[in-house]
Length: 142
Image (tube, rainbow, N blue to C red):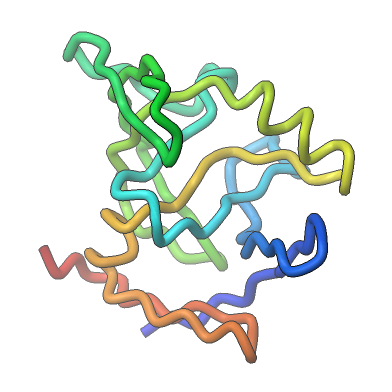
């Protein structure tokens, strides 16, 4: 079990985002949002060179709103967190321009993507908000 510490960013009163430092070569200011409500992990489509597009066609995804968002499927060859390589990660690609513009209003962090329940469940994640740490097994359970 690997323990990795995260930060909690408060945008507005009682509005929190748990953030894990992204470990992508050359991307110092980027972070992952731990998003237990996301069924699939999502990656910023603007970060060319950090993913390999799948041969699958584009798809539509729905978030909390009713709007459909066009996405593509891609693979990140190495999902590294806390100095540990968790192997490749299948992601949906979404344009994070608007998300990063919103973050810029509150902090200097840029978002690389959302760590969704696909990754969290596969690695038996235990999230301890009090200690600001996430525990993950390195072997896939699914």
